[in-house]
Length: 121
Image (cartoon, rainbow, N blue to C red; front, side, top):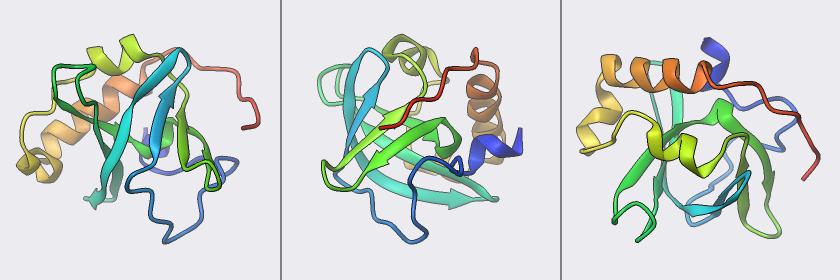
């Protein structure tokens, strides 16, 4: 499950790359934008502001779910659907980004999703 916390090698991620403000897109549409990036306990993740899509909530997404990054278009594409992101363990407060048990539950959820075909972005 460690791979869920690391960018896939073919994602286009560059070490130190700032994704803040990038639009986040799932298989079936836009989710929101990257509010911030964080890494605690070697669990790298994105906090995505969903705007009105999920009633103004943010969601936490492990970077292993990132399918591709397009720095020119400022988009991050995920290898999951909007419904799968919405069904993930609910993100309530920033303190959860430093809660090992919460992060483990999020990682376990995304790790168990069915594998997706990889496509170039």
